Length: 386
Image (spheres, rainbow, N blue to C red):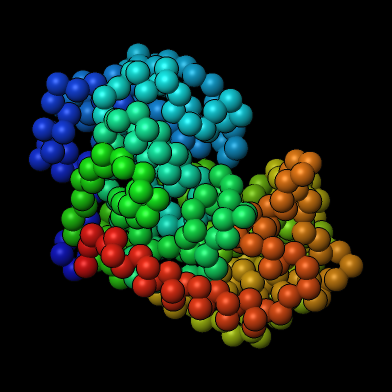
């Protein structure tokens, strides 16, 4: 289905109109598997034809999308181009070093984001904004629409005391900005002073979600193979901070939710009785092939999105967590921090400590509603698109 103005075109589709940004300059490209134009051609190939592409940079999942979630990638040579590839995701570094900065004059960013604060690509974008500003380098963002739309914000706004690589900036969990708009917001609000240029997309309206774009879905990570999964991820990512399985190691991550202590029928009935708009569940029994509860028989629910516009993924997540902790108080747990002295992942993902102790679902959702409405007003000045 096409959008009201025809097929959506992203920044890379308009690259020739902005050729002067790259003339007589060495170009670095920060991209991933989603870096492709509307004809499914790689941004790497296109830039090789249009400018002096000198070096490649990868975020989580790598330049070619062949790195798993959290996988540590070292510096290597890309076989297809012969170019050096530096990883900006790993234990060694997440910032541009002087060695890297010396390889280019202008850095191009072309990665499809998913519109959720905890997706690490936006932390990488924040870091390169800072690093390019400090080094006096130009950053060009080839803009892409937000698949979750640009009108609605949802969830709490990150408390910077809980800042991490899964939440580095005070955004609502579902923030309703394109990557170009987000870059502009961070650059201006933090007074970074980066020479930021945005190559806009066309054919996109703020209230349109991915199914209205008239384009194919290119999975931004191995766990987000469909739009439905990605929409749910905008809230259900919180499950990763608990001892519930979020469905990793199954055919439907972020749609399958459960644990070895969950009764599938019981949870399904309780969830459906909540009557949340845009979503229903069916019972499921599963054995994760990886991640939490690997090899163990688990009960849970399979989530089905019935209305993309009405569903509120964060409300789904908070409701599920509330039901599970009340149905199974002896078994449900918040996972401890990954490292000594760190904060629990649930706090990092949710952006505060509100879900760590005893909490009231209605109070949490009311607070999220206030914060997200305030954030909607705050972000309007950075909107590029109607």
